[in-house]
Structures are given as structure tokens and as C-alpha cells.
Amino acid sequence: AQSVTQPDIHITVSEGASLELRCNYSYGATPYLFWYVQSPGQGLQLLLKYFSGDTLVQGIKGFEAEFKRSQSSFNLRKPSVHWSDAAEYFCAVGGTDSWGKLQFGSGTQVVVTP
Amino acid sequence: DVKVTQSSRYLVKRTGEKVFLECVQDMDHENMFWYRQDPGLGLRLIYFSYDVKMKEKGDIPEGYSVSREKKERFSLILESASTNQTSMYLCASSLSTEINSPLHFGNGTRLTVT
Image 1 (cartoon, rainbow over the protein chains, first blue to last red):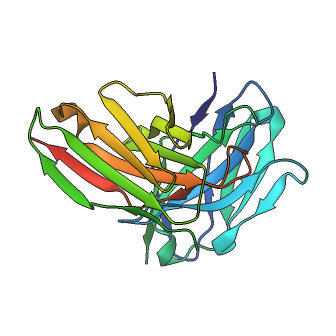
Image 2 (cartoon, rainbow over the protein chains, first blue to last red):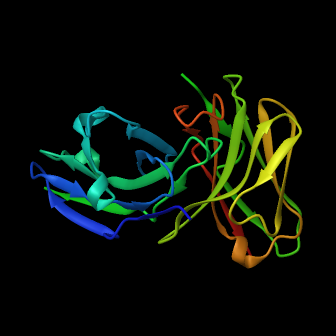
């Protein structure tokens, strides 16, 4: 069965500091991995996705993520956080057999302090 | 830009009422989804539809039904609302069932059942 684990429920980071959000997945076939962000009062917006090829993928808003098959991980990073990055972040997994459905993690709430 | 519109931002209903949540997308997308979002649980798929009049159960369909009479509209129905259905409901659409077709989300409907 497919599943996604985001071990950190809540992270507090200072503005300008680096950020790393963890994501571990379990998927029986080749995984397609996604990170979404949800700003307060908004729906989810796609940050980036990994399908194949280069294991380091770049996304919008200065985010990047690295796929590590050996660790079943797809961690999200940003070198320098801005106050506008305060949001909830969701990792998700799907596959070519999933009819476009995604399995989402439980989310990580990011708080940015001045 | 794709727009997914959920008709209500907030709803308050009484136990036992029949509740309709409406979602409309304006980009001729084939796939539409209803997710439920709860703290600590992330997003869980209730139902999805890959074509008009077609529907498939997601992970938590109990207590819900759906209707898709037109391509652009996907309705979630709570036949007899219960307090454990108090939640945030997110509608999403995607162009096709291909996994590389990104999900576009509405802003959500926060339903309270009293």
C-alpha cells in the first residue's frame, strides 16, 4: 500500500534561515512525488514534482527537493526563508497506475519568526 | 489560469441535514476530486470522477456520495450530516488521469455540523 510520512508536524524557523522538511514514502511501483503548499485560507498549490531523471528538482518560490531512492525520501529545502513562506506543506505520492490520484502526507506547519 | 471554484467558503448545518457541496472548474478538465482535510491527517480522498457520470470511491467514501452530471461540475453530497463530518473539504481537478497532470485546488469549504 502506498503511504506518505511527514515526521514533523510543526517547524519554527527564523526569517533568513534555511528550511528542510522531511518526507518519507512507501510505494510499490515507481513513485511520482510532489510537494504542495497551502497558505492560510487557500487551496493547495504545487511547488514541485519529481517523475524521473535528475534527483534534485527545482520548484517555484525558491524551493528544491531531493529524491533519494535508497532512503525512500523526498525532502524539501529552501536556503533562506521569507516571512511569506509561513504555510502548511504537504508531500504526496502517486504512480502511473493511480488514475491521477495522490496519497498525501499529514502536513508540516511552518512558522516563520522575525 | 485554471480556476476551481467551491460555492461556499463556510457552511453550518445541523445533524441529519442533507448537505450539498458544489465545485466548478473552468478548464475542461476530465478528472475531479473531493478531499477531506483534518489536522494531523492531511488530505484524504473521498471520491473522484474521471468523466461525466463516472465516479470512483476514494479512501473514505462512507457517508458521502457524489454527482457529476456535467463535466465542469462535481458535487459532494452528505446524505445525513453527522458531527464527525465537520471538516475542511477541498475540491480539485486535473486535465487527465495521467500522473503528470497537476492537481488544481479550490480554496475549500469549511463545514461545521452541529
